[in-house]
Image (tube, rainbow, N blue to C red; front, side, top):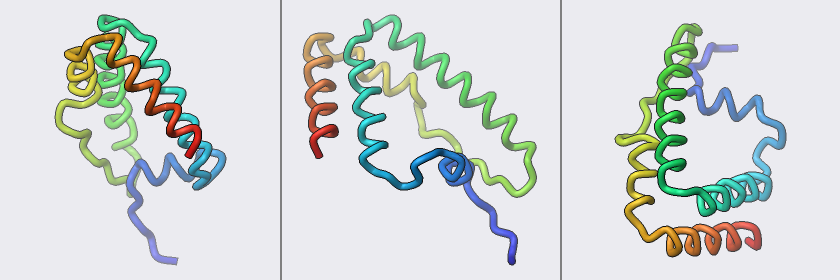
Length: 107
């Protein structure tokens, strides 16, 4: 068997229960969107900053394993996404995110 370099995302996904059960993943995403919809602006920004810090530390830890390819985080990271969300009206943001979550749960 030849050695293959797997991306960290592929290795983590392989460890998760459920494999490629898209319904399960849609439900997880819907739950996350509902939580974001219920979150105030400051809490959302703090959580995103913490997520970015965790990601940097986690990537540094994982980079120590041989054969693991690290893919850089997207520009702006979680904080950039959260910053875009808090620029929206909070009630409107919540309504849109809850509607998106409902669509995910029914599809």
